[in-house]
Image (cartoon, rainbow, N blue to C red):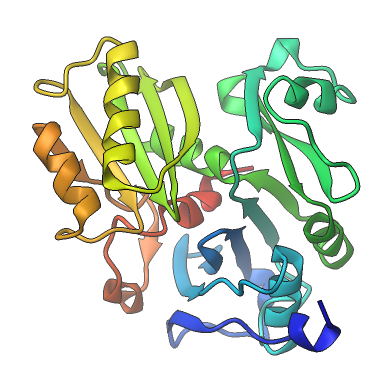
Length: 292
């Protein structure tokens, strides 16, 4: 890949900004980024008002790595790559992760933990961890090495984590104390994340590849059966990159009686500019505001 190719800026699918955003006062804002097969997404939250004021979505560049895409975006963007933010968090999206109880985690053993599920290529990948302090849980995951290196160089105090950690924090935040076990779906580009939570405690989390609507419903029903849930009786909440009339939602609705789209994370504010997109989209990006 040539340097010229790597610096071709990704194409914006959504670029929504509140007029109150002040790029000259970055210390008043948090910057949130996600990077994965669906491309790059960024959000900016006003810390004082606890409110999202920016949402941007960029299509993936097939000829470039995630690091190349992010560097290309930073080369022509007025916010990405700039320093002085209050907090910066980047979530990577892939299937290379595992979660374990915090008492069993030993810093320095990230690679052996992950090797039970994924053999990282240490020339091109780095193994990281993120601790969910309130859940007594640790997520161990692989990330593109060049992406992690760029992020650490530009934002040495930033936090790198896996997209399932953002999903988990967001779901636990708005699930019910003492509630029954419930299934949550997050549908991305040819990847389905299934999360089960009961009484604000995670019981299951995994990412499945899919290429057809039949794959999607197969994995969903399989997990429900393994958890002794009934598609005719138990409710399912779904977020992600799909439409109300899409084949994906149609097949979910066909086999699951009580299914609904999820909301944005509760207790946060959102600029009216963000009303241009459905509330069930970009949940993990918003939920980065709930991570530590």
